[in-house]
Length: 165
Image (tube, rainbow, N blue to C red; front, side):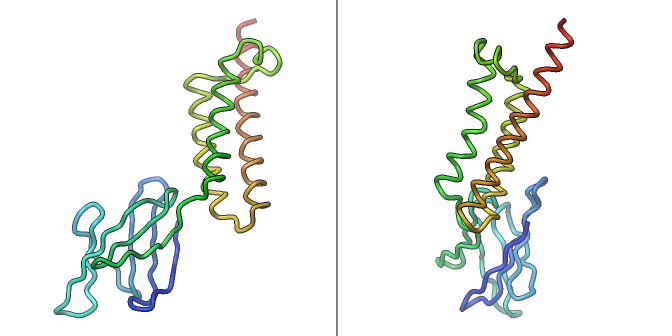
């Protein structure tokens, strides 16, 4: 995932983060910053100057760079409704999958399998909602993720029931 912003003092700032490994790269005006520690980077605008850049957050939680006391927001944090909607996917699976009565209506797998599926769907939902620009598209992305998650859990639930018969 990559995000680029313009800053009046540092010019073009590009932030890259690998979704699987979490590896981060920060580029100021086509100059890749040198990694000093886990979230501390060094920017060398010229041969005699070292500028310390501290990275806080991730693509999903929002990214802020601290450059010599100046806070630069590169990626905004998710909105409250994006978090609430995404967590509802997980909560729905946990509650439904642990209710005998509800599973008699639609058997969805709960436990570790359902939790893993719905937890992954929660992360995907936040990612897709952050990428969408309008509230309507954000809610559509959430709805699609929710339906896919429930369908996967239901397919596994039906499969487990057919194995037990």
